[in-house]
Image 1 (cartoon, rainbow, N blue to C red):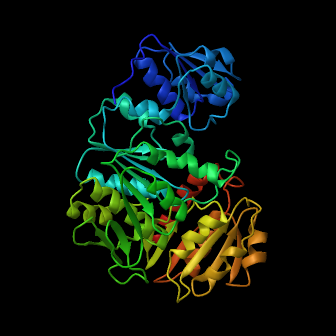
Image 2 (image 1 turned 180 degrees about the vertical axis):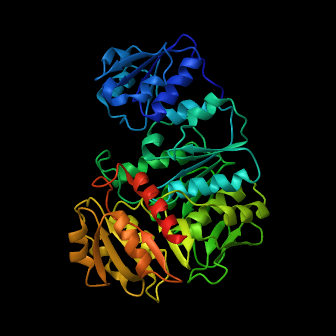
Image 3 (image 1 turned 90 degrees about the vertical axis):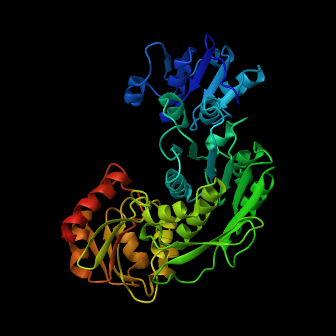
Length: 462
């Protein structure tokens, strides 16, 4: 795909989050006359404006329709719906509208890309796939995960491959963006404030497969009918991952509880014998991470990463911050930071990552609730939770709905909960921060909460 000639063209970039700023910088570097527009004002945008070149025209606090209809190209940030009336009018007048990843890909000279989408697990799978590829080649990892793809085009740094997390918002704006390997992990209802229904949401994600060629590869979760249908529409070779016996063109985990050496992942290339990989890394504990690991193994091996590099990458992967992250260990106790679990569904996944049979988890929950019931967690408490420590605004509701299942103590704040957890836990136990709540009652965000837990846990583990 040849890079577009932007010199002297009029480009309007809509939305000044990280992706929009990177897109504006890239267009300006290519000699375009760039206008950026955002409904937010200067005070709200702050640092984003400082990163823009002086040549960029700023339209803040609202949109001028003329900036859209008078442009040669409109580039939309992921947070800007393409149903925006100004964007729709530009399209009616024949102005091309691209998403940021579409723009970036056109400046990457056909760089092989692994694209990862899905409702849950995208970040872990993207980061893990990137770590596996990086064992064998120079690899950029980013997209929705954190670093916009345009930053790679801007950097000039050499890369042999890119692994990109792709949201439905990003995929709405692609036309020629092509993934050598495209993976969809799962599809469940999400972002229904932006989409009419789950079918419309899935259709946005399915665009990842529509641009593939016959020599590309599609990867899908074998237990998810929507994911299979989406990937099955690709012109590429379909591979699946899931639980069960080894099967052709797949990655499989035979299921069951992990043993002392973890679990085995079987990758079976089409027409060849199965290959066995061991999943024993505590950063990838839990059934959901076993699925993420199968998807990553598929993506890496189908990109040609040698088997020994894949195994080394699985063993060394540190995990993502604030997602079942082991932050301290001492006196036989593991301290695990799952601060990213800001809703009940996420805490369900985090708690289920630990085996049942003996109550070993001292669970810290609480914060600003989202008015969702905590009762769905009840089936996981028996044989897992040794004690429940509550914090923050929603502590009374958590105790009311779950307090009969395990010894429960209100601790007020995180520091108090950590001190109490140190008293209650012993060798073989896990202290798990998995709040099921937002952090805004006591912290600026879940990252600040997770870092506070790391510091407090490290002190107690000494």
